[in-house]
Amino acid sequence: MTEHDDRHHPLDDAPKRGLLILVVGPSGVGKDSLLDGARDRLSKETHCCFPRRCITRPAGTIGENHIPVRPDDFPSMAKQGAFLLSWQAHDMCYGVPRHVQDDVTNGKTVIVNVSRSVIDDARALVGEDNVRVISICANSDVLRQRLEARGREDRYEVEKRLARASAYQVNGPNVMQVHNDADLQTGISRFIEAIRAPQLNSEPV
Ligand SMILES: Nc1ncnc2c1ncn2[C@@H]1O[C@H](COP(=O)(O)OP(=O)(O)O)[C@@H](O)[C@H]1O
Ligand SMILES: O=P(O)(O)OC[C@H]1O[C@H](OP(=O)(O)OP(=O)(O)O)[C@H](O)[C@@H]1O
Image (cartoon, rainbow, N blue to C red; front, side):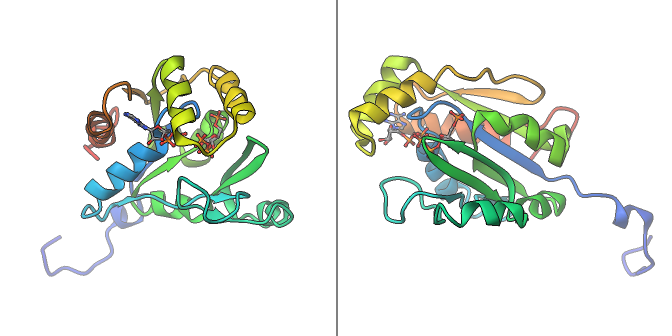
């Protein structure tokens, strides 16, 4: 086709190749802090998006800027298809909005913090070639220090979160590990490098 040829080309119908980047790891490892840092640095890259999660946690709590949902409303929203992915943890319900699937289909790189328990659901829904898992790691002493320093949970909740830290193995295709065991700026740089790395058998993100 020439530059001025407006005939329909078969490739126009081919699905575009976006990427769903699942940021996973135990509570306190730094997922939200790394996401905040990456959001600031990648804000000019319009193909990257960082959707807000729906959580049955009251508004104004320390930490991420989530969409608060009343616990009574969450099940009906899930039933009506409001979420691409949803799970329960820490006595709360979490949902990733359904529009994320369209964003990926439209070629966006969508970066979101999810439970390790929904990785396989995401691969099945979006296609495993279109999913990258960035697994954030730090040792358990570091997790404890960070959870205590964050101060959002009481001592009992901190212990429960530490007990859950090793509850899941993260494996399967397209998994990258990022060690957030140094200062935060180093962690953010490593995280952005993992976001920008080429996908296996694919073009650079
Ligand atoms: N590399 C780091 N060095 C020091 N403190 C960090 C680092 N990464 C995160 N933190 C701190 O650790 C605590 C937990 O981080 P957070 O991002 O809330 O973790 P998560 O979302 O994985 O639970 C926060 O108080 C945060 O400021
Ligand atoms: O099933 P897991 O892999 O253990 O993860 C469970 C949930 O814990 C985290 O939530 P949240 O960000 O509210 O808690 P955190 O800040 O303490 O990590 C994470 O984002 C998941 O939503």
